[in-house]
Image 1: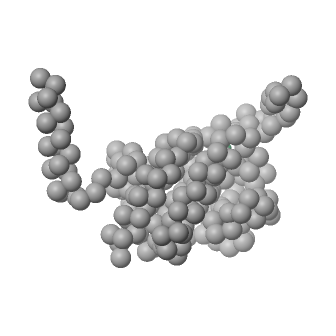
Image 2: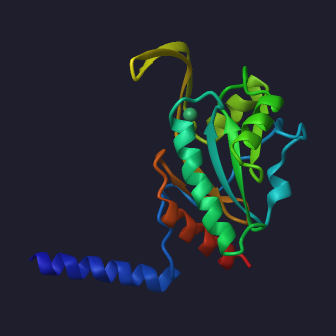
Image 3: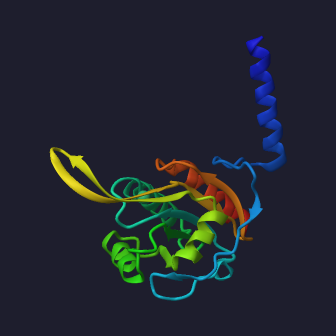
Length: 206
Ligand SMILES: [Cu+2]
């Protein structure tokens, strides 16, 4: 019996391979879907942002805030590895990493710029804006955000205060035509899978 299941599973995989040649490794449920417009946000350089300006590039979008104690440092460290690998393959100009803040109060243009430079995310784009504008984007991209204020946490016997904003940890991938094609819904990003998928999208779109 088991053998038959295995065989069936193999054939399904084989047929989907014949149809597409490649299967994206993230969560593709509900995708591809036209990426909602990102309106009224500004970049860490103080310029207005538009998705239109990035047509032709694969976009990797994540969501977070500069004072995040744990989740964002983790997800951005994985993204940095993705960046290093993609650049090694010669794809530096073919994609863009975008970080959208979930903290309109504290993540000003200046703070985002400082965060970006301090951590070596120089080629990434950090976006902020008015609360209403950001709320629209969070909603459109299915990002849960809940500001819990300042919380005290223990770190090796020391009590430290952290600004806590609960937020969805994920990576949204948009292809060169402006469609969301998949998401990776974890702070522990599978670096190799993402590099393979983005490389595939880049090569397919050329
Ligand atoms: Cu975070």
